[in-house]
Structure formats: C-alpha cells, structure tokens
Amino acid sequence: MSITRHEELIGMKKVSEAVACTLKEMRNYAKPGMTTKQLDNYGAKILSDFGAKSAPYLTYGFPGWTCISVNNEFCHGIPSDKRTLQEGDLINIDVSAELNGFWSDNGGSFVLGEDINQHQKLINASKEILHKAIHSIKGGIRISDIGFLIETEAKKRGYKVIKNLTGHGIGRSLHEEPENIANFKDRFNRARFRKNAVVAIETFITTTSTYAETLKDGWTMVGNKGGFMAQHEHTIVVTDGKPIVLTEMNEIWN
Figure 1 (cartoon, rainbow, N blue to C red):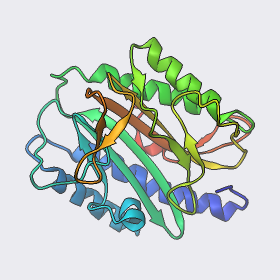
Figure 2 (spheres, one colour):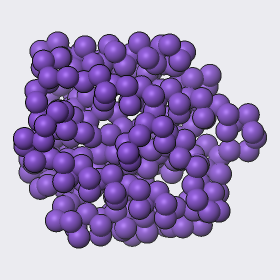
Figure 3 (tube, one colour):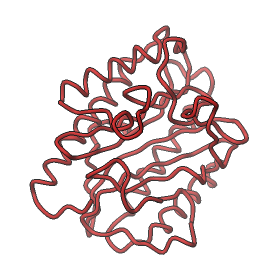
C-alpha cells in the first residue's frame, strides 16, 4: 500500500506494534524443553491481546498462529507438540498479522541459549545486511539494486542467498506489489521503490543452499543443498530519506 493519509500511518503503526511485540516476547519466552506449539500458543495470546489476527492463518489457512522453524528448517515451520526446543537450536520466528484492516510482517532468527552449534555468525550477518539494505532504500531506488547489495554483502561474509524467497509489499493485505523484493540482482525487475510505499524487507542468508524447497507437509521449507539459513525482516515505510521502520520495537538489531 501507499500511505496517503495520517490515519493509514497510525493503522500501520498499531499492527506493526502488535507483530513486533509478539516476536520480541516469543523470543524472550523460548526455553529448552518447550515445544514449538507451546511457543506458538504464547504468541497467539499476545496477538489476541492486541486484537490482531494471524496473517498466515487468515490468508492461507496455515496450521499455526506464527511460523516457527528450527535448525535445518528455513521457513514456514508448523508449530508442533512433537517438536521440543533444545539448547543451541537455530530458531526462526515469523510473525505477521492483521489489525483493523492493516497488515504487518516481521521475523528474526536467533540461537536458543548457548551458541554450541556456532550459528551466531550467520545470524549476525543476516541482521547487519538487513540494516544496511533498509537504510539504503528510498524513493526512486531500484529494487534490484537492493537485491544486489544483499547478495554482495552475503558473499563478502562467505554466505549465499535464497533466490526463490523474497520481501514484498504489504499494508492492506499480507502480500502486495511489489511482490518480488529479491535478495539478488534480478535484472528482469526494473521496478523502483516508491515514496510512501509500505514494504516488508527480509534477508535470506544461507550457508550452502540457494533455493528453498517445500517438504511433504506442504508448508515447511528447507534448503536444496541443506545447511542453515538466517532470516530477519522489518516492515518499513519508504521515504525520500531515512525509512520509517514500523517494526523496530522487535529489537532484532539490539
């Protein structure tokens, strides 16, 4: 969507607060021995307290309120009573929701407890690259140039990017134009970021894979060559200068 009235900015700030607070609180609540379903139920309660509704459930009938992916799962992991979290797990939580007709999306990867499996370097790369990408966006910048920046920064650090997962426009629904804010220089995408547009910018930084494939459950995605992925995501408003990071209170950059 494009912000044309002050009321729309207020609406986007409210739903962004709901998803950002939910993500932050879920990250703080996660403990070894807990199931991903317990963690999801905790997030669902926070969203409900804000009056917000799960976007993946509303839009796709996703079997959970949030997406929780663990270790080799890249994204869209289904919360389960059978999946128990363990010390050192690489966890990704993606929280998106609708509130009063406005939609917002955010996500973040983190290590549970002590970094015994050496995932923190990958996570830090994803966070840093997202920060650099977002603060390079303003009205008139080519979308493909941001993709080029993300992939270049990943390669500098010895990592790859996923080619078939992208950021996207958001606001009045979960996915809007521009649909493909890729993590690489898509030379076929000649679109530019527009001032006042609301977009979800996300990194998909990996150790070995370049494509994500869907498992038999129809939702969970893993790498085509295995390995691990870190994802971080903010919903922002594009301006002529520094973007407005609507989900900044999720504290993924802290």
